[in-house]
Image (cartoon, rainbow, N blue to C red):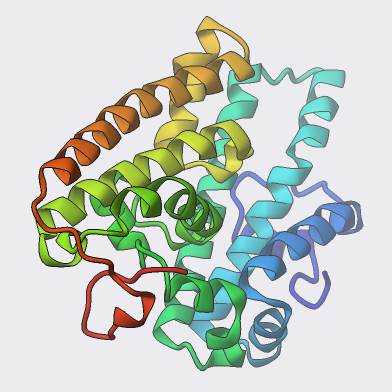
Length: 282
């Protein structure tokens, strides 16, 4: 950790509200957790190169990601310490503090991933699973996902849900559309399919992701609306029901449109071309 921060004042430059009395060594467990999470996303080789080269803009975001994730992990211990003393920290205050750290972490990770996507040869990023997998996805960028469901155009969230995009396409979309050419020839039809897919992704994400891994709009709903009317599992189910009600209606409309289509032509995976705005996956 001292490779990045030599004292607590340096860390406080990137994460707000850091208590100057904190001993840097006490954050070591939180640092290990943060390093694992960030390294898994950007790959160990990228982590090492960023730490070694210290390119100004990239390294600044790197330090911000580390610092804010560390303080998020450590915030529960700070809350306990405050409540054990004269200063009391209310639950809503603790949740707001955590949300600030999470939001800062997301912002830093978004900037890092945007940089890597625009420099795919950086430390072999183009060979990473995250980067290679998205080349064959029906939704190929955070901006495209955001067009159908608002995720603040977050590359961080987009990379987190790639496996869900792949799974839902394979389980729900491919069986419905693989035998018609409308998906490639009719952009409006393709848009409706992608919208259903993105909402289905969100339905599964709210049931399986940690709250910190969901977009801020959904985290806000949990903290300010859904949690007030029940437990977290009940809140997740409410959101899932909201998403799936729309998804199932759209699937039904898609099936109706397919049944009315006169053309029924098998589309082979080999039809994928660089100039197409839609790729099929095997």
